[in-house]
Length: 251
Length: 251
DNA sequence: CGAATTCTTGACTAGGTTCAACTCCGGTGG
DNA sequence: CCACCGGAGTTGAACCTAGTCAAGAATTCG
Image (cartoon, rainbow over all chains, first blue to last red; front, top):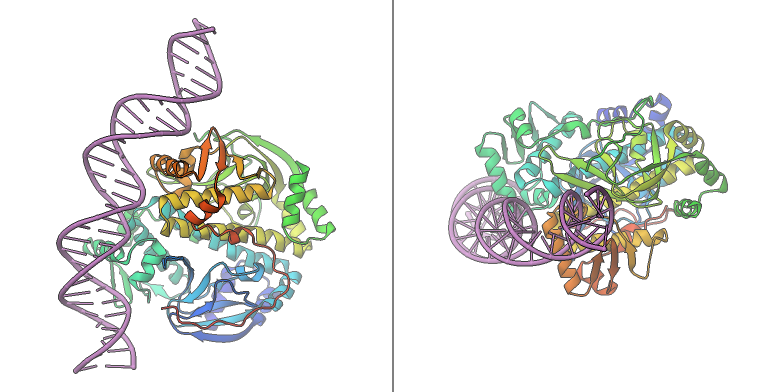
């Protein structure tokens, strides 16, 4: 478990050992929650953020008519809800999509530390920017991709994110999400998730059974769904060389 | 123009006069761009961020098949592309949706200042978190709302955001977006935008003609499209009192 | 082993796309 | 001054993707 935290802290950029120690020192406790439990409720004002150690957590918005949209999914190693650190009230819930374990970070501690460690603050800021980059990718998918493509892209994304924390390898991974969870992420009905999954299965691209996913043909899948992983590979920018303002007609 | 900057800085939270001065000092120059020009290209590594002074800018992702998705829209007073400050390469373009003016902030200056002014850094972080909150709201809309609702919600959002910077009042505002731009934001065809707009017009809720929008019945519109403005009203959290971890079955 | 989810499949429906034609409007040049 | 032009808006008709409803099969869990 500690190795997961190490791996994550490493990915956060080239923090000094000081900063890394500061951050590890913040983790003040552990909590567990069972699948279906809300870690943080919409409308509440949490006093802590958490680092997800095991399991899957979804950001869930519930509509008046009972509809659900999962706007993001966190995998082990992700900070959950750094948003709650700066925002007054939660505009969505954080729900355990499987049994989960989290490490708790008190906002008061987080505030104190970030005021004295600007590089660390920047690393955490970056973490939320990566969230935003994933949000944008999902927006493109929901707005302009068909159902099968959205599903395939999500499977690719999950695989790479899990592989990055050593929870997936050889194009297979465990995934506790139900088809209904997938539907709420992909903005479609669970029936259609099922049908789309069947197409991926019948074309030999992906098998998904009993909570285990096998990507049988990674190359064909990424081509079929036009998956470009670059949005997941975001790192803290170091130097600042680059091109001047671009001027080009797009219309 | 300076009053716009003042208003914006004020909204960023209770910065000290020192911090406010620091931020104003960052604005190193002005640029103009005509509708259709790209301010920042996908794949580039910008060395500056900008504050939008006039006009509208969209974050645009272009698909291989020519499809476009606008994942966010910036109105005057918004910082554009703080993302580019920390991320290595742009995963999308920033395109002027009308003629625009921007104030430029060099990343090197931004970096120096945020390292010595943690509160200011936090205010800018917050700015990107608000972007993310809007992203989530759009995700919910794209995933779970029908076309008319999405359109109505966008009109409500635009009105409130423009009103906050004194560019809208009395439920009317100027909006240079074409129906095709709207389509690319709402993930639908421009034909269907036109039809949805006609429904809003015929039911007496909204008129949109020659770049001018009138919301004829705000109350009815917000009810019709279940618009909840709270996600736009996000402020820097000050104290840190709140409820402990919530435990509730949602399934 | 029985109950409750979850998954699977079929039949029908509806919201939205596509294609195409036509209109409206502002700008431009003869 | 007006005729033309191009971009934006408007509308109809045919088509299609995905949703809904419903029922049965498979899994998991107590």
